[in-house]
Image (cartoon, rainbow, N blue to C red; front, side, top):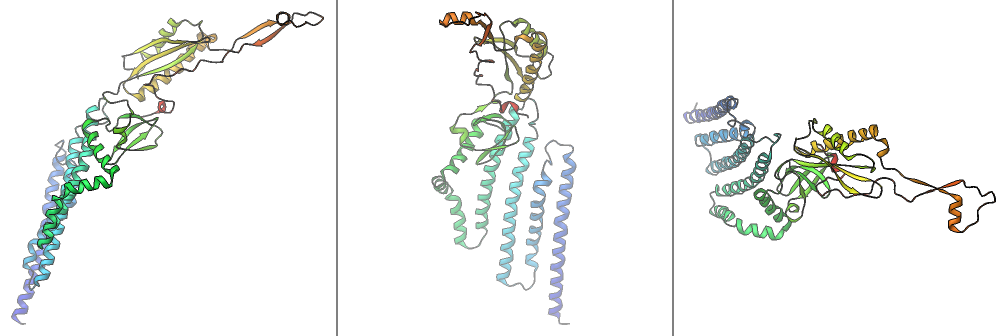
Length: 402
């Protein structure tokens, strides 16, 4: 065999050996590294949290591409233009993998930071604040990473003109943002609203809000809109700018504690003090009462009924709704058992037909019978309508469940 041909075969054998060695080495390093991290995850509250999920694949790609780039010079008799093309392709893949790895690091940081704050805790004000801010900041940082990675991708080319475009891309980011803000005002408004929400915190994740008459919880805050989970499992999609430009109710802005009312409409004959004692007997042992506020007051009087307001407090709006329902049921049952005549009723007046005829100047019948006739007084059945306080939910919003 010709010596040059034998030498060429040895070189290609060396390239294949190095290629296989690169794959084995990169996968071995990847396996050992993440194996150690998975073991440490059980002993540490932060280390390893989400590393395999967010960093495993981009790290493997970086290891393999780096090893392949290292063996490219060993390829024999490779044309100069093909060598440069292969190198450029591997460099582009490495730059993209580094951007992928950087995005994974953002998710790892968010997961490690949010692990310390449990949204299911009873006092989760700080947890909701941190979750909201981290979600908004994560989207902003990922946007910057994509921009920087694209600029680095252009810098990787040897052509000076393309390298110049990469520099100009980052330099013109401020001008481009102004142009985009002018062309897409609503998008820019939502972006700025997201920044305002992150710093001023009018809403947070898991906040209880009333928006456009709908009771629900803040389920998700995106870069353009907010998803509100309504009590009946519907989803209300609201632009971010809405929460900056319009008024809305936030029932858990500083604390989740809330006062609730249950109204009773009864006759004047019922003893209010006994009703007050019965309310205490119902609410005080109730597990949904937070042992802060419990009282009964006469809040309105009409020509037919008394309006009694049962006021009670709970740790959150869902518990308060259940407590109010129990109070209504048990107070109504107690009145039915002890004072059945105290419910609102329509009153009738018996008027003698003879007296009625004399008063109107009309003749009576020949027998002059004084049989009474009945006339219904124009009185309204049931209680008068009364407006609830502004902090009370509507009928739909009262049926909310966490």
